[in-house]
Amino acid sequence: MAASTGVKVPRNFRLLEELEEGQKGVGDGTVSWGLEDDEDMTLTKWTGMIIGPAKTTYENRIYSLKIECGARYPEVHPNVRFVTKINMNGINSNGMVDERSIPVLAKWQSAYSIKVLLQDLRRLMLCKENMKLPQPPEGQMYNN
Image 1: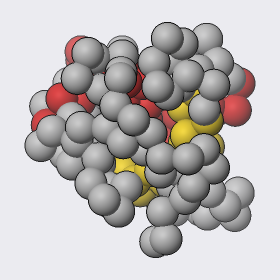
Image 2: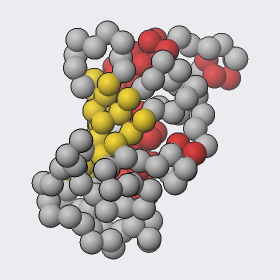
Image 3: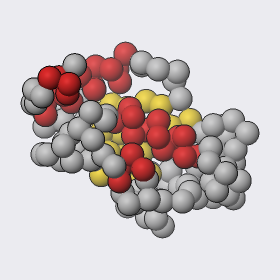
Image 4: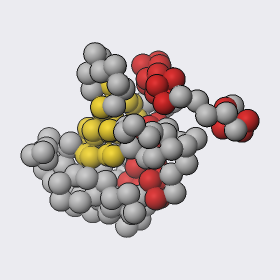
């Protein structure tokens, strides 16, 4: 693995690997990700999807997110915003994910990925302070 050898993988190589992983559907299917626009040669704007965990107020809901990987990704975490309205600690009234409140963003490491980010957000839905929060009516979106 490049991280263990101290070799820095160029941003676009890294993002192409993440794109390929997202297209293959690696994992259990509870999260997915891909480019917002297949023509985006900068690999900057992504979409994500999280299926709400069972036995929570998020169950049977599909949450859409927008993810922006800036020029310094993966050294700097991406900006993340929910498109689908959600009531969850660490998510503001516009759907922006507060980097200080979400552990994977607060302690971001270049070895992390979009997949790790989405899986961590889903894991947080299972935390006792989030799992019973009343949710907005299904299908509502943020305006921005």
